[in-house]
Image (cartoon, rainbow, N blue to C red):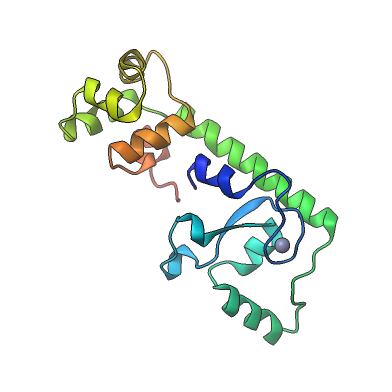
Length: 174
Ligand SMILES: [Zn+2]
């Protein structure tokens, strides 16, 4: 799952699908991750969910060719109703994933990661801009960071976001 800050930067309110012009409900990697595409802003574009799913792991050129070969419309055409429904489904799924990440956050895992980096709580507070009290209470399990805060911790501690989650979530893709 993309970092929320990046997502909101790409998916501004009212943004249109790069491919069909319909209302965008997702962020597409122009060059897909499986072909070496990155999460850099230059590689991310707003797209509707039907386009995003139809494009899958293809580049825009490969996708266009495969649609034309299969006798499908180019640019893609979807009914507005279908785009809306699929965009809403995607949004609900993203909200669910965010809530799960917060629910499964493990303070003891965060502490292990931080100690593995030999970074005192004070230094982590300084580098993230979070208060020392917050960092202590997250590690003690008395409160939980938001998804955005977990993303920031994962960048500063140089660890994948899912390493901060309880083992229940291991094996989850993305
Ligand atoms: Zn589209």
